[in-house]
Length: 221
Image 1 (cartoon, helix red, strand yellow):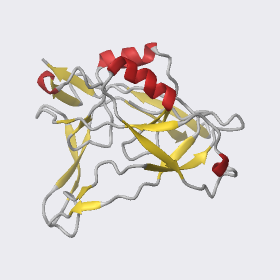
Image 2 (cartoon, rainbow, N blue to C red; image 1 turned 90 degrees about the horizontal axis):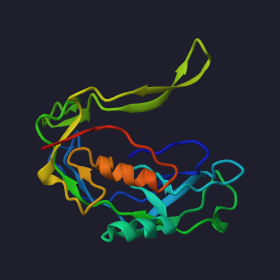
Image 3 (cartoon, rainbow, N blue to C red; image 1 turned 120 degrees about the vertical axis):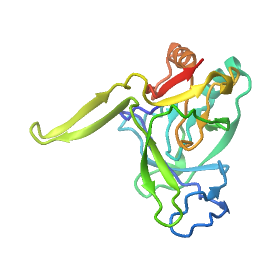
Image 4 (cartoon, rainbow, N blue to C red; image 1 turned 30 degrees about the vertical axis):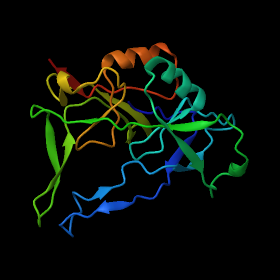
């Protein structure tokens, strides 16, 4: 799942990260464990999405967390029945006037706690290897990408779309997929939120905005 950054209001995560278990390596910190999802979720608005101050059905504050309108949460929970939500607190923004007088739709965090492992066939590359403890951080390769980059010739930002390469990306086992849990995370890539293709189709049928999807892999039968 991926945000669409257009006319919609954007915000930043401002919830402090609480360290609960320190890694033995003082150099890299890989392996440090933090409180998974501190609640309430504190955010600071970056902008209101232009003069119309459009608050999307989904809002993406970074940090692998996402916010929905309370009405959207209720609609989704009528379908899935087992969703959990958390409170959202807004702090005063230094960039936007009148953030204390927010009169927009009530917002909640949609909690995503389910986490599953990936299979060895998953294609990754080592993004960083600690020279002290030899721990590594990995990036997925071969997945679908959408981004913008500056084109010097055209002197403007252009959109880039790269489709997932066949057989590449995240490979999951069907035995780890819980059909009653629509959203989940994957070990080592827990800042990303995933869903199955059937859930993607269902969400698209609801006509929800500020939401896009990337093809990150497949489920192995």
